[in-house]
Structures are given as structure tokens and as C-alpha cells.
Length: 256
Image (cartoon, rainbow, N blue to C red; front, side, top):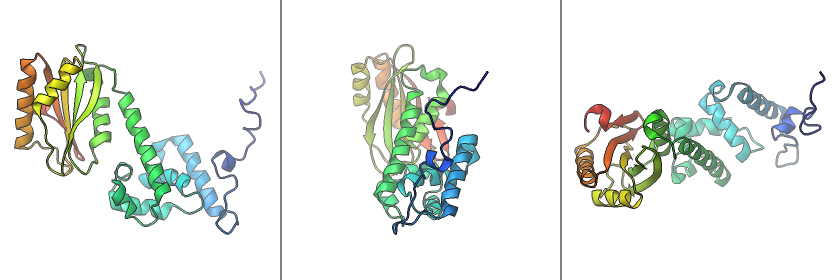
């Protein structure tokens, strides 16, 4: 049997550089992009397509993102500077805009590309938990919360609202605070649960310090929300604290 023709005629014969977006790279003076940069980009993209993200270290994954923002320069030095400043690929993506702008070589195009990738990652992670039974997809939930909150510079308090089948029906930010405090009002949490006809809650907040160990105020407000929810027949399943060291579950640690 003869092989099927390509979906787009001519695509199979197209040079790899053209398919990867480097068809006619040029420097500001009109000359072509140096071959060593052009070849490096082609090799890096090929390795990614063959082996996925696991085949690349953080700095090379970051280079792939920067290729689009800076099409006519070697971006490896910038990738290294960003990782030195923020520690990891995810740390770069979630870095606050003012801190990104402090890094030499970061302009509006770089910021835009980084934030597009960050938003896409959050949306993908969220799609894996919304409208699904949360208790049977717990790992996906932890991944989502860590991606969304693990690198925030201030504390954020989110409420996950579940229906009678423990399906996640809403994920809402309840409050945003400072580096070590966020105001939370149990009455507002329960009021919103009633508005959504939710039957259960999961509380989630982050510790910008990176240490997910609960503070006395964390424990106190959790007990207040649990008591208020109990009065209305609403179950508090858990309170998750997200830190760079990983998430902590109040239920698993015996606080609930």
C-alpha cells in the first residue's frame, strides 16, 4: 500500500527550520541569523518534539519560550539569568511583573510570552479538576492548586465549592492579603456556599514563605469555618496549605 499523501501538500518536504518558525531569520542589519543560533534552535525544538519536556532541563524549556519573544538573538544567557533569579521554570513563569522587569533583557515581549505560558498551564490544570469528582482526582487537584498558588508573593485564600456528589462546581478567590496574612470571614464563606447550593467545601491558601506548616490563626479560622458550615449542613472536607515544599492537608495531618 502506498503511503498516504500529506494533509498539506508540500509540508513533508518543507525544511525543518521553516516548520519551526526560523524560515528567514535576520539580524537588525538585515543579515541572516548566525547559523549556530539557527541550528541550535532547530535541534532544541527537534529534541522537544521527540522526547517532550522530560528531555530538556529547565533552561532549555525556557529557551523554547523565549525563542518567540526574541527571534533574532541567542536567548540562552537570558534564560540563565531568569533561572538564577527565580530558581526554576515554574518560578520564572509565575514571577511578579515588576520583578521580571528587573532582569536585564526582559522587555514587554518576553513578559507577554511568559505570562501566556503561565495562563495556559493554569487553564489546563484547572480543566482537569473542574466539574469532576474531586475526591477521586485528588492528585490533579493538588497539582492545580500548586500551579496556581505555589509561587505567589502574597497570601491568597481560595474556596473550592462541591456539590452533593463532591464534584467541583466553583473555584473562587475569597481574599488576598500580605506576605504572611490574609483576611478570611467565615460568614462570607458559608453565605457564598449557600448561594451556589454547595454541599461541601475545601479551603486552600498559600504560604509565600514556602513552609506549609499551619499557623495558629490558620487553625483558628479553619475551626470557625467548619463550625459555621456545620450549622448549615455543609461539610468541610479539608484545608490545604500550598508551599514551595509541597502541599499540606489539614485532614491528613489531624487538624480536622
